[in-house]
Image (cartoon, rainbow, N blue to C red):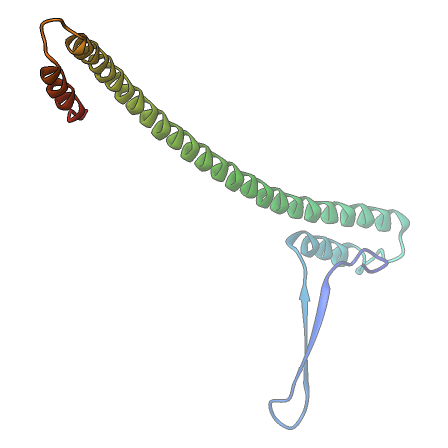
Length: 161
């Protein structure tokens, strides 16, 4: 920055379209810097170039322009940061929804297994009842001979559940 508060950045370009070099200067500044420069040129140069109060006024004006530029840069950075946070929040919400969906799927599978387990318990209970009945039938009976008992045992061995 210049001692008088001048903030523009100057770029000098050189080209040689014909036989002689041509220099071009480009001044880059923000809108706030441009406004301060206009005020500085209109106030300082025509009449009051060394006036202390005018110089003080222009210094304050320059600081305001610089602060406005900093505020603009801050707003840009803040906007970028907020967009990043919004993106992170969106990603987190998507992951949460995926996790909830997966939990719903697992819960459904567990409920299905519970229903199957209940059916299996009923089948097992029925099989135990049938087995008890068969045991009673295969108990030694004074009325059955050894041959009949062996035939009944062979028939029981062939049963599958």
